[in-house]
Amino acid sequence: MANGNFVDYVKIYLRSGDGGAGSAHFYRAKGILKGGPDGGDGGRGGDIILKGNRNLWTLLGFKYRKHTKAAHGGGGRENNQYGADADDIILEVPVGTLVRNPDTGDVLFEIAEHDQETVIVPGGRGGKGNTFFKSSTHQTPRYAQPGEEGEEVWRILELKLLADVGLVGLPNVGKSTLLSVMSAAKPEIANYEFTTLVPNIGMVQYRDGKSFAMADIPGIIEGAHEGKGLGHRFLRHIERNATLLFCIPADADDIRGQYQILLNELRQYNPELIDKPRILALTRADMVDEELKQLRKEEIPTDLQHLYISSITGEGITELKDLLYEKVIAEREDGDDQKMAMEGE
Image 1: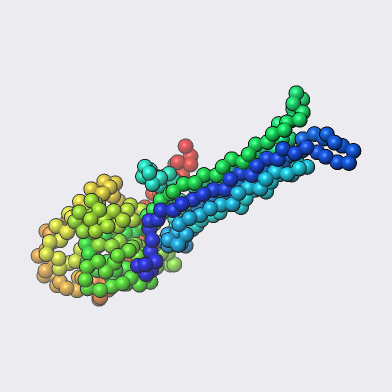
Image 2 (image 1 turned 180 degrees about the vertical axis):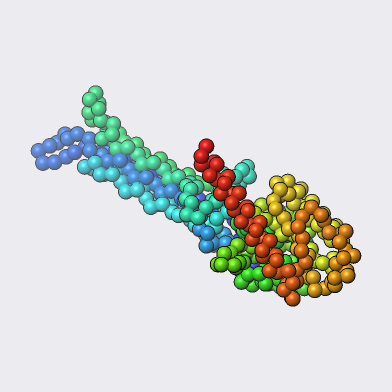
């Protein structure tokens, strides 16, 4: 996905439709000069609805459509004819899209599933015609309701990528190369920092037609939790990854130090990220020999599984796929159990 085509944060203006006015009409016909009320109700104004689409990975469409207005409902007419309801507008968004109030920053709701539909701005109700107000004590009401006005709001759409595995590391540690080797994704790759400026998603094909999604998050720098280097924009995507794959070069000067920097940035941004399953991949294994691996054993953190990999020679890639898929399946089953438990309550 080209950098310019990835949009994960937009502010949009939305205006739902007004309800149609009710009619204050009285029946008239040849020989009937004073018929009763026959004004119909007005139609409903159009809603604006968000719908989840798992085939979308970006909010790019809203970059060129920042204003959306729904149509108004039709007015009621004589002979108790109701005004037409206006068509709703359905805006498709990627699964994992949050909707925020721009004034308070509060999350209003989340589109978490494919085909999930949520009304983001309801249309106005149609006004009642004078027929509605007729009663035994008031048989000739000469009034009808105006339609209810629609709502106009500004909303923030914020995308958090849904992926089974998120690649976490400092800039230029080989994450993009690893993603390109393990999936069909074609991220930009070069030997300088910050080649990756937006997240990239790739589908990793496993055995027997099974697969899982892997996201390459732009390199994290120290201070990212404070917003340095667009840290907040990068880190929020990690919140939706079920498993984190820490990537540190096998020939790094301080493996443990790099790991602690990454861990601290995640902890400072959101302490819950520390509870996610994580694996350490020591990349560029082709740059170190077995003797150096033995000498550096004590530098490797002991609180997580680790393995040496090389995107160049293929060392450890199959084993990494096995380990990641094992973690992914465990997280999926745990999520299914939690969902069933909530539905049973």
